[in-house]
Length: 409
View 1: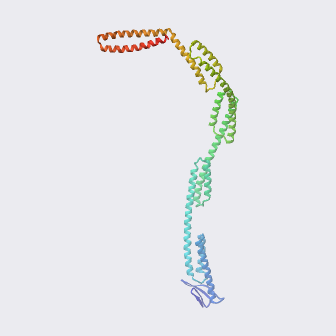
View 2: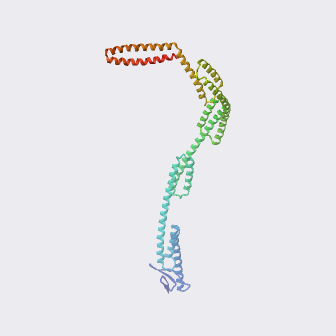
């Protein structure tokens, strides 16, 4: 019989391994010496030990799934408890127990990590849904549309949650996108309708503008074009290419009219400049009438100037007030001379002036006589009153004398 600390071989060749629970038969050896038998089963033990070491390394240094690690552990545990090997199987069993605890710890860590990842994914998806629901009411069509597409890409990059939660969040997310798309389609459909209405309105305006382009009613047609422009601006915009084409026609019609008007006005302006020169010469001639020494001759000269003035025609608008003012000043001087002459020669006015002098003189004489009597009587209060009345009447008398003198000039 042969033995070592962990096993033995009896005379019949039966091989035993020693454990804390006692001996256990691990095999039979008939082909050689007991030492060879123990060596063979010890190599079996070493193989199991190597496998345990490899599993320990994989569990502790790689991302080996807990399920796979547990399967490998159970396989090795069966080899330790039931396998055919000689060695310190109790030590291997303890290593497996420790490894089992490590696997369970790793399982819990990964479970917690998965739960955390799920929570983070849920929060991320809920944030995406919330933003999408806010964007659903946006009218910033381009920006909101681009952002929603970016949110979809972000969603696709996130892990899935449990099916129910993921489906519920996706339904909200998808609904928000659908609401936005519906609003956007409605907006652009209305915009298309508005543009079509604008096209029809502007085609009618173009037709009006083109019909007016040959008009020579400069004032009324220019006003009509201003009205057309106001209506054009109020009509809104058609599709860009149509808008540009209609605008070119509309603007072209206006240009035809205003260029024709400009040519006519340029010719008229040249004529008015010549008229200005003629009227300036007449203004100088009219101003030479002053000062008036002979009213009848002055009036005749002014009539002759006025006739020539009216025959000349229009002058530029900006100089018209000044030229008219110069002629008006001469006319006003002649009217004032006429008024003065009339006042001097008006017999009724002369008589009224003389009558007023006589009236106030008589009243002053009477007050003076009464005043003399009051002074002689020593009536001081009456003297004061009469002196005041006399001063007032004398003032009126002086004014009457000046009026009378005007008629004797």
